[in-house]
View 1 (cartoon, one colour):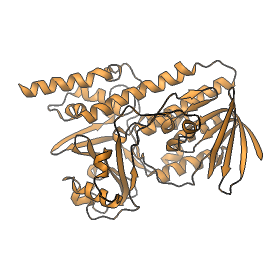
View 2 (cartoon, one colour; view 1 turned 90 degrees about the horizontal axis):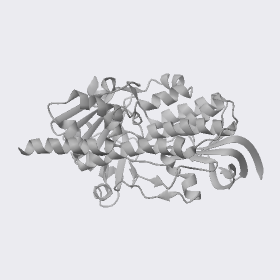
View 3 (cartoon, one colour; view 1 turned 120 degrees about the vertical axis):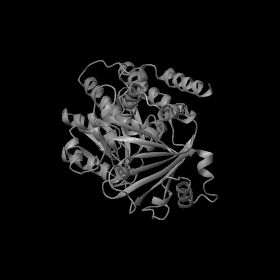
View 4 (spheres, helix red, strand yellow; view 1 turned 180 degrees about the vertical axis):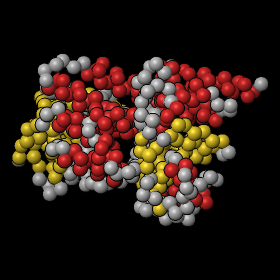
Length: 413
């Protein structure tokens, strides 16, 4: 069996793995990336939020992404019958990026992976982790390639960015149930032949069918659009009696008064994918010699596109802390990594829970709009969930519910 020796092993070549490996390489560490699949590949998570731009810039990946001319995302629109709420990232509380992208992930992830390879990162596709053994902070990871050949990778630190593969949570028994109620999604892409010009044809939209059921519409710059339905798992499964995802997504589109004409007769570019009970969590997001990033640690819900923001935030932070540790510093992983990352997770978890209770929807669609409240919520939706100067971050666990109850009380008078 062959052996390799590296400073850091990164598991997964998605956005989190690319951010961390690029930053590690930039700081002269010997880094190895193993990716189970072959790129390009179709995955969910096509709507980004502005916070990710900070990480791509710091990792040196922004210029390559900019060349791809992805659809720019300036904000987001929420629809509920005749009610409309539009958030503009340039009108948020605090500083930070005012835009990001809407991306076909196959192209986006391929661009990132090829760019880190150009930077000198050793990246192996179609290579699966089958076992890992830790000796203190050092580790020996056994991997198998597409030809069935195995080898050992000796590393001083491991960053698990394996996404839904959740390699270390499975191998180290770190899985635990999510605190969020079970929801599922079905999605595909279409050739958007009925797309209108201007904002209607470019702005990401969320069409609320019921309080807990909504349709996403994410236009891409290539003329295609991602469309998906999200709802409680039981609801999603009832969209098709025989589990036919095409039938289910067709039925979901028919439920949208706003989008039924635009999408009812267009063909799906691939058989709609079913993501069942997608929310997940872990007992801890770090240990001796490893850190979990992105979906390998926590995945919440697609409603506010938080997935990639947590992926790149944790990917960048884990790389920085690993560099310090390998340079001989003592790193407080509990305080500097776990507490920090999980604070942002808790903020977004509150917003997701209050979305599905309907409380956040009350704030979105209340008229007249309160510009100050909207700016502060907008900053959260942009991914700046660690800015405690924003009361909608600092008091996230009470402020939404209290304001929603106030609005409901006023309506009852």
